[in-house]
Length: 98
Image (tube, rainbow, N blue to C red; front, side, top):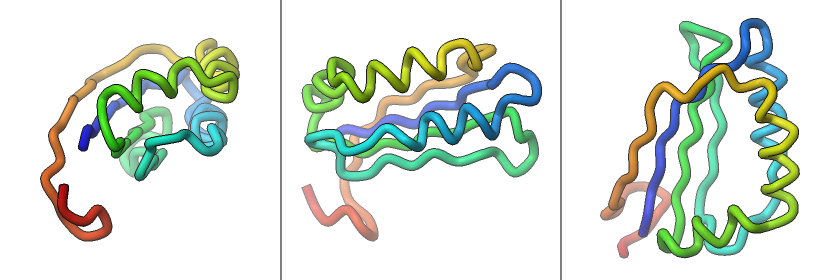
């Protein structure tokens, strides 16, 4: 399994709109979990948590037309990326065992 957690800063006042765009990505082959959340302390900070079958599945998703559309639509609303973490999930509730 392959995991990602990213913290994205939206342009001031655009957090809700950016979150809605990111949450509307649609199905992605190999994606086991994709969560978009607004930070409870700062509405212009968006957290994206992803769980994939593999890093290759994630990389392939970036070529999907639906993902390309979300990237193009959301990019103008992004002020910056605060943090990005790649993970190797080993198990837990809802994901089973590798």
